Image 1 (tube, one colour):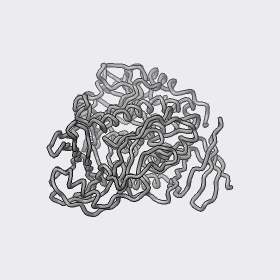
Image 2 (cartoon, rainbow, N blue to C red; image 1 turned 90 degrees about the horizontal axis):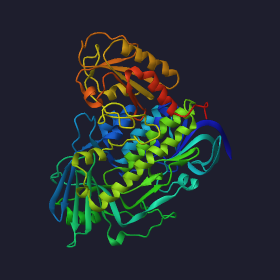
Image 3 (spheres, one colour; image 1 turned 90 degrees about the vertical axis):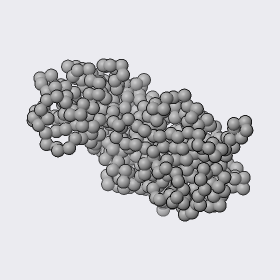
Image 4 (cartoon, rainbow, N blue to C red; image 1 turned 120 degrees about the vertical axis):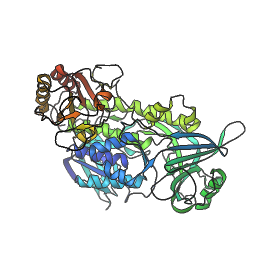
Length: 551
């Protein structure tokens, strides 16, 4: 057996969108990692296709989003039909300050783009390489890998992250519980083309149901638009002749079945039965039988080993929450691992991963189960909040261990909340306005944003913030109110932008001169009066466990 020393900081198991995002974010933070996947090649399946606005913001911070935008198609809403009649129309309208809308992209394309981005950072997927076992001790993790050639390798790493799906060996080895259950129905998926004149509005999904006299759902067709003329990923109840018993050895009935998939006539029969307008299917790219469960682990990790994505939570695909929740698991964990690996925070910081993300997973599992069984129409939430929640723009950690004390108006963004994007930031040189995301892009660490009129108070706050940069990777920038000469040079020792459109003030609701800290995952870490910059930043640093050197 070949042996490797501790030249790798983090081993990531599973190269789906979650594992790829975790590896990309870790590499962006300068962490050495290896990414292994037991499959010899990327699967050509359009499994997870919905990309939420919050995920696009996360990828924007990484510098990846442009490639996604050029490949995806917009998702504008959903039409719901019941027994042949239109019953509801959900338009996915977001406030104008939200930078990205909803999108659809086949999972294999999402993986391709992430893989190319990761390769640009110097890391490639080790395909055909399987995690066989691992053990951990106070100083690290010893993993046994079986490579594509059949050779065994023993690898010593500091941390291990399991992004290896519903049947995760990492989760099982840790002994994490995976409580939940399976839905009785089995579905079939197909990636097909429809007639060009089918008549559905562009960018709209279709959900067509048949309900029995007692109101129970006994037939359903769901069509999600994909890139390409008339192309959809369709899901529907499986006919009896394709139903098969659960074969998973661990009893977790979730995901694509390995048996024969449905053929075009199977899909066409359901479309003929349920589609509000007739259409002829063609160009079947792939198909499969799909089973759905709802489960979540009792904890997101133990010691030096963590789980993310489907390894931690599975649920119905309603609302396209699964992959997006997993990507944001990865974004939450990556920056914390990076600080600990570099010795800039103590290992206790990693406990905040479970504390922040498991409540999110529990909420998503519960909500998607309700929506799957009763539909969006039965959700009592007002329409605006429902859409913001589905967009994952309301995910926050106010009750988490890292949230600083609130400051300012009660309706203002507070520590733990998503840091809003805003438009209309200008500089004396650029002839075009910027968004806050433009300013934050490719800044991998924490960013202190100081808002106030140019003067002694702002200059002093900038100096105090710069003095903290040696304790924590921290970029510092200033935002000036919209009043003032936009062409006047600003000399603060930090980059400065003017809130020319007034959007920063409108969305952040600063209480006079106010400072903010944006975390690497785009959440607010702190909010404080500008006169208390040194105390506030020191307080946030104290919230991060005391660094003990690289571990």
